[in-house]
Length: 400
Image 1 (cartoon, rainbow, N blue to C red):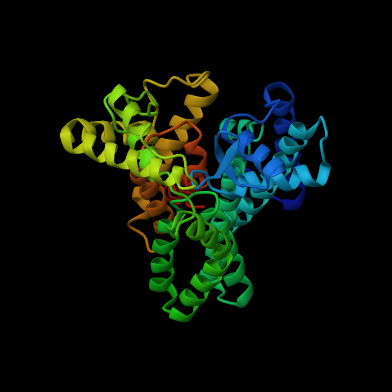
Image 2: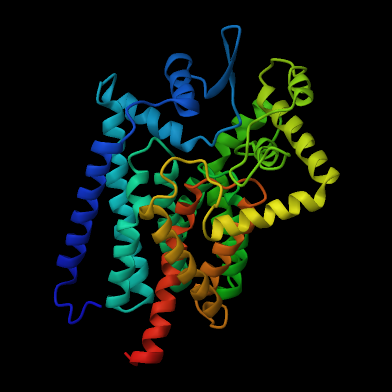
């Protein structure tokens, strides 16, 4: 433990500096060198055709509803600013490293509001130097933005519970809107959070105003999707995600192997601007039929996903997943956060919310499939709950 902290700012700056150096090192040695897969395709279509599209048929690019829009727009804005620079990817990764420092700074402010200085700095060290968190900024992935806005969401939530003014309400709503544009399912978490806020502050006006602000910020993209696809949603990929994690070849991480029968069905979809929507609906139908046909098998698979999400995936296919730098920190933080969550349930504090957030995400994502990077979305809540465990142990045994 850190004792007699006379220079909080110095320690915070030191942690930020070490964190930044670690991220630059990771970017240099392990960073992506190009933008490929869906991000590359969407970025190219935004540049060349001014269409947020992923599919192409006979030279025509169709608009997509499959991918959340914020990260491709983030990439596109950087491309507009710097142009066709050969260091484009490296610049993106460096910007992600800087944004990661912002998340570290605000995460400290969260911990400092809840715990003692010693516990706060210890939790900050874990969060800032957690191997997966360091590595994530070196990849072209939306997870860096997800971690940033999750931290800002938690920070603004604490502020709105303590001080319900216009600024806290606006900042809370902006972070919610950003997360909805990054994670299609986040609107569920938002509505549950609104219920929690109402139970705590009993001010329906604040709930209504936040909802209006979020709706205004989401309206442009909701309007685009309604005009194009006839549905009011940010993304529509739940059918594909459910199928990927629920067929006989699927494991914890899901599987994209299609049966011959499904391949033939998919080929019957007409190549129109609603292709993504029709495709997702067909995947949804296939996934539901799979689950109905063998519910016990897929329930067991669901439980296996939960265990893998909570702890370690025993059948991961990802390179370096079983590195000690990954599995040891993950196991330690998982065990501590679970213990902290169960302790928090007994107390009337903000940690009850973090416990609910933690377990709800696990139960929700396990319906689909679990990838290693999903752990990062839970890391802020896990560290907060682990700090609660340390704080409880410190009070019980050290009386400090």
